[in-house]
Length: 114
Length: 115
Image 1 (tube, rainbow over the protein chains, first blue to last red):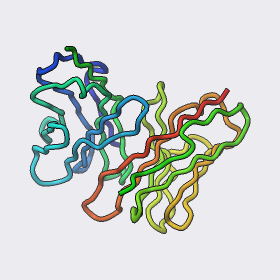
Image 2: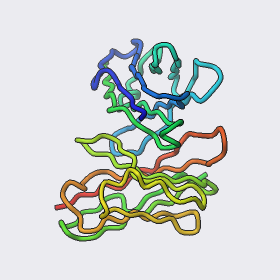
Image 3: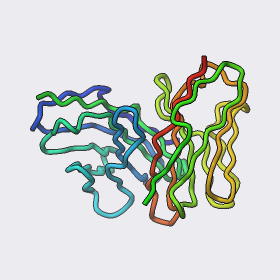
Image 4: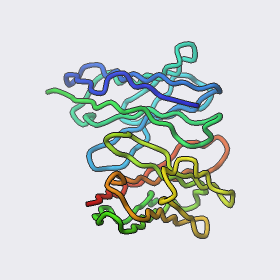
């Protein structure tokens, strides 16, 4: 079975500081990995994805993530936080025995301080 | 183009009543998913439809839950004899179903409150 662990249910950064949200996954086959963002009372918006190819993937709003197979990680970063980045972020995995359904981590709430 | 839409946006029902939640996927998307988001359980997969194949119902929590997809487009999730633990946000997502395209696009969700 596939699983996702997001380290830190809450992360707080200052505006302009580096954002780092951690995600580790478990999968017996090559995974497809995703980061989604959820603003209050809204659905999930896709930030970026990794399926195959380049391990450093860039997404919307200046976010990027690097797939590291040896570390089973897919951490999300952004060089400079903006107030509008405050939201909840979910890492998800699919593929292999899990088929196309997404298995989500518990989420990380990002707070940006002015 | 239009995204995934869901209705109603909010539903309050009494324990024991049946409810129907509707999802309109992105036009042309052959794959459709239902998930549930609750405080205690996080985001959970419920059911998956792909084209004319038999749906993957492995995530449905009990036989009170069912879903259908008519004409390969609109889907309805039905919960019979609702219980308080069914209170959650029900999210629908669709994807193109094409090989190599695995991302899912989510609707705004239906917030279900069982009183």
